[in-house]
Length: 65
Image 1 (tube, rainbow, N blue to C red):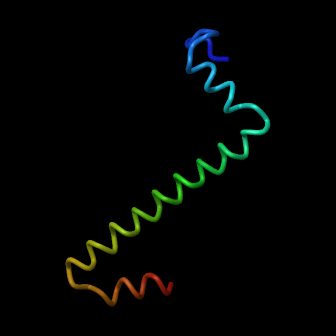
Image 2 (cartoon, helix red, strand yellow):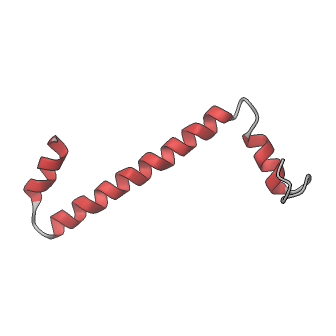
């Protein structure tokens, strides 16, 4: 448990539940989900900027690399 959170705090209980063996794969999947969602939004932002500049051919070229 967390020493700073104390033994009976909601945060300590939440971390205890997250670290149970059955929940570790679920936590890992959530981390991957957030990472790949971030990555997709980052690429979408780049493509939107290229569209605003009228450089549509570069978008297709980057996707085919």
